[in-house]
Length: 249
Image (cartoon, rainbow, N blue to C red; front, side, top):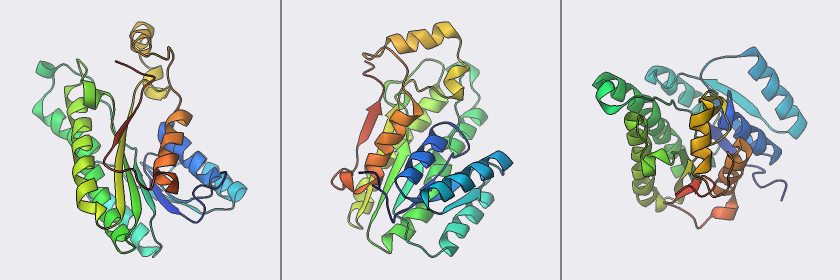
């Protein structure tokens, strides 16, 4: 059970920090070779992935691009294509959070949030899914949010973009299923990351109190569900959105 991804090549976005970095680390421990996508080059990050690859005897290749730069995304995808290896998994983690009440949010800002949190994810998925189709197999996981299901005051643009990811997950699972490709989504709740640590204590506590498990979740707990969805343990699971929220509701 310690090598659930042995021999698999997986693309993970958002690897610099948070859930993305933790996911990359757990995937590496389960022997996946990883295309580690990050927003920009970072010395500490490159030292980290170098050690991670040596410690686990796997390959990790950094791929750098900003989700707002579609030419850079295209160049990053071309690097993956040029490796000429089968891609077994894709996890779309990178994104942005924007807080703003509806009447205080410009259409330009809504478009920006959708560009980062939805359209860039679909652009990446178009490239990677074409590689997967050549081998009639693969698993894609989109990172949505409970906000995309339940809504949240002050997060119209963010919740709408995350809801769009859920809708696209269902449709892509239908379109790509015949090619042996599974497509699922997860919807994290309150997870201890740099973003949630920046919340005022009273607002953070209110969110946590809504959970049946009265605490925030950890990036590791999210990454373990991603491990399940990318691994062969979930070969009959597709078109689903799994909440990871301690039972909010």
